Length: 216
Image 1 (cartoon, helix red, strand yellow):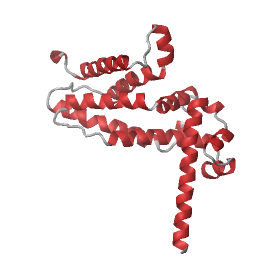
Image 2 (image 1 turned 90 degrees about the horizontal axis):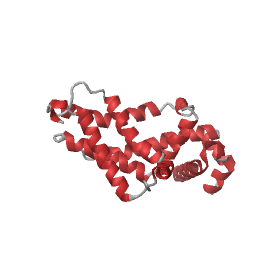
Image 3 (image 1 turned 90 degrees about the vertical axis):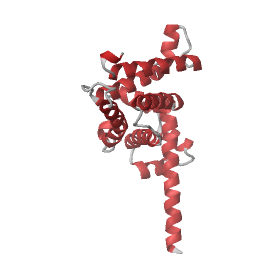
Image 4 (image 1 turned 135 degrees about the vertical axis):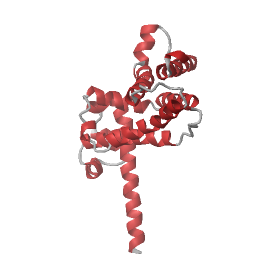
């Protein structure tokens, strides 16, 4: 009976912690870090401030956990990709499409990253997990590039980090600045047609960046 009770309590604790974390993502996405109040998060989680401090210690550490969680979710989704390394060009296009579509479907990911950049990465620096998580993301790209190099399809002088930054920036900037760019350009960048056109453009651009000049 004691083991069962302990198991139930542990499960309830995990559920409460997960509920607070999800509430924090919603509130921080909506209100930013400075505007994301602890009492607002507690209400959203149907919990109380005492439980938030019990599980996370502080609002600052809660945001660190939010950062880690958003990256972890991205990596989990990316890890489910079935990339065919025998066809590295298609594999690279599939990866670019995945990253693009993830940003489009998860605006909270874009928002949390934007908030953290406003704070100059001070929460990211407190995390012992982000370096591992970023390594996993780059690790998905590396075998694709190496497979393309072995087949003579991709350049030999490629810096994996540069390719990763190219893909991430092309996907992130469009989404993080969608509202201002829509006003500036006079076109709705949330339009499905606009998004499809941009994905086609950046997919081609990434391939041009990794293929030898003679193959362009």
